[in-house]
Length: 289
Picture 1 (cartoon, helix red, strand yellow):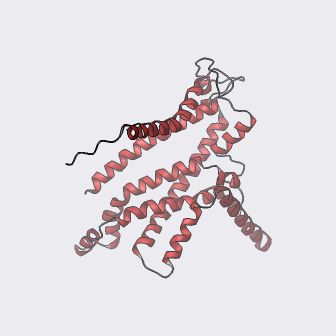
Picture 2: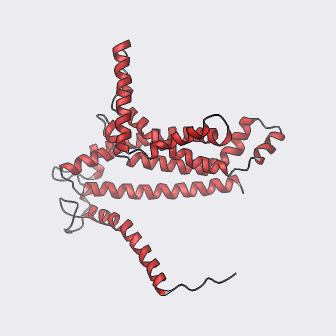
Picture 3: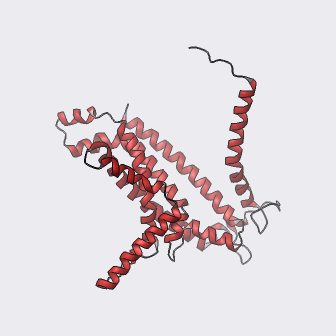
């Protein structure tokens, strides 16, 4: 092995400073939010007034902790419900899109591939307004023409799911497509030559290989849906997801209970990421080389 050439001291210093500055910028705000979730004050900002668990456990007229804040818990449940539906739809449709774009040739394939990427470059607010206007026109037309009341096209959770799905499915498609592009199709041909049906080959050969990328796509879809604000704000009805409720409370005057929510979400996201990484590693080992 050829040893690497020594780098000048100023280059080493610059690289170390860049890495340090990057991690400071990334983690210090999160650390501040986490620390002040335990601040014995009425505001989620300095100065430090002492340690307390009230913003997690309190249940009184003066303070209500996260575990007893029914409105916050309900909004977390709403966000989870929406994220689960968006994840299932995005991974399912995204996997089908990946097979369509990677395995088939048809007129206009390039144009369809480009058009499917457009939701990624459209601002979330514009996307939400467009979906709301389009869905409302269809609902009004059905009501005026046939007397049908299509509630799922009115502002509410079904429309939030459709709005988030419209761009998150693109990310799932790209993730699965990248894995499918690297797949050795001779494995499928060998299984077919041995007498396996196409459905059996898909279920026992192709999908096990794609499982890690599908798990990664599911993780990204869930987290992106859970934290989405711009598109959700345009489409939400009476049931507020967590991001919308937190925004409303910030406008009214925040308390450290929002820090407690943020800390809980940071810990939950970290645990989910570790579990998914472990599951992805086990899936790769099971799929073989």
